[in-house]
Length: 311
Picture (spheres, rainbow, N blue to C red):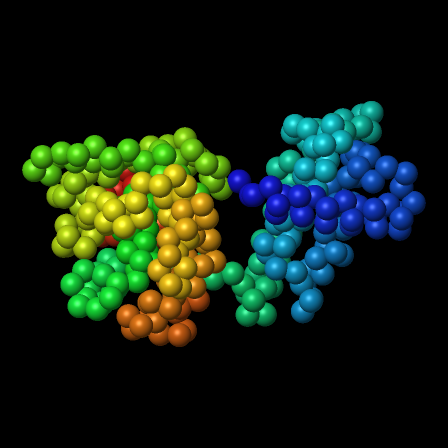
C-alpha cells in the first residue's frame, strides 16, 4: 500500500491532467463515464507520459498516475468492475479497473525504457556469504569500535533473509510489537507482530524467530542466527518506546522516536557492501528488496519448494 503522501501526490497529478484534458476536449465533467472512457484515458496517458519517445516518463511515475486516476474516478462514485452496455451506450464502474489496454501500454513503455537504458533493474539477492562477511568485518569479533548501525544492519539483514521480508515491510515496526520469550538451552523465541501498513498482505502477520539452532535452515554459523542478531540489536537499543529499527546518528546516538528510513538504510547497506568487495557496477542493485530475493534463492538452494517459501 502506498503511503498517504505519495497517494495524495498521485491524485493531485491525476486531477491536473484531467483538467487539461477537459479544457482541450471542452468536456463539462472530466470524470464523466462513457463507453469511450477507457480509450480516452489511454490517449491521455499516451500523450502525457510521452510513451515511445526519449522523454518518456518512468514506469513508477506512470504507475503513480494510473493509481491517481483510479482514485479520482472512485471518489466520483465510479467504483467496481468496468461494464459496458452496448445496446444503451452506457457504462458503469471504474474505467481503470482491470483495463487490459492500460496494462499493455505500461508493459510496452517498460520495454521502451529498457531500450533507452532507463529500465528498472531487479534487486540483486543478498547472499549469506555477504551477511557473514559484513558481520566478521564490522560486528562479531572485529576488534575495533562498533558502529551501532552495523549491529542494526546485521539484524535487519539476518531477519530479512530468514523470514523473507523487505526492509520497507518492517521499518516502521514498534518495539511494542516485539515479544521476547526467554528460554533454556535453545528454547527462547522472539515474536514479530507486523501491525503497520505495508505494500502487500504482510500487515497483520506474525513471525517467530527461535533461539539457535532454531527453526531456520541457515545453519552456517551463529552469524546467521536471527534470534542472536535481533536480540543483540535490541540489547543495544534498549527498551525505550518507539521504533524497533530506529534511527542512529553518525555519532552513534540511538533515536527511538524516528525509524531508520529506507533511503538511509539503502545508503549504509551499499557503503558497507562496497567495503566488503561488491563492485560499483552492482551496488545500485542492492536495496531493501535484496533480503527477500536472497531468502527465496537461499531456500531454493536448500531444496524448499516455492509454494512453501511463499507461505
